[in-house]
Length: 212
Image 1 (cartoon, helix red, strand yellow):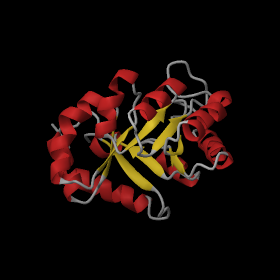
Image 2 (tube, helix red, strand yellow):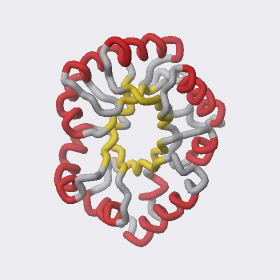
Image 3 (cartoon, one colour):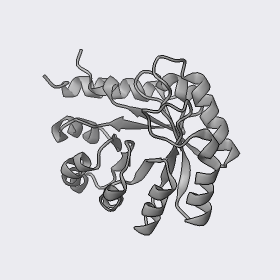
Image 4 (tube, one colour):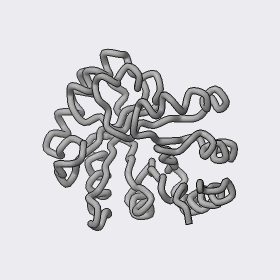
């Protein structure tokens, strides 16, 4: 049974209250695997930032919703393959998962001018996407300085089962060093720590949609 609209709106309100002390932070509701009818109550309540992991799912779901709510902002938070770049460029208002020079080249080739964030694999986990910390300066130089992408920030997903705070603090330090204002970090289980460490974008899905 899907989560009822009343529960969705109550959880959205709880998140809004939790973010009240962080007025510059924005909530991205992670809407992967959710049908359009589950998203309508949130859109009607004024939520405008949503995150998707897969290009094709977003293509199937969001054009009709955007026609009704043209001011919504769609974020790609999952990995992007080069053969999906053209389609992604037409769908997403921001891409959070730039992680290699070849993908930067592909985004530049299609003239993508909307905000881009680099995903950083802080713990060098082999199963995760993201550039290694040692390779981050070169990717920033290539993407921002050579290609002219609209590089605005960094994104990360801390290792599961570890205290996320040191990773969030490390990402904030890296962003300051490279003069990147946006920090996309924090999910359902750790968004309070992310906000405390300076997150400007938190990505929350299961907290909103999970059934009681």
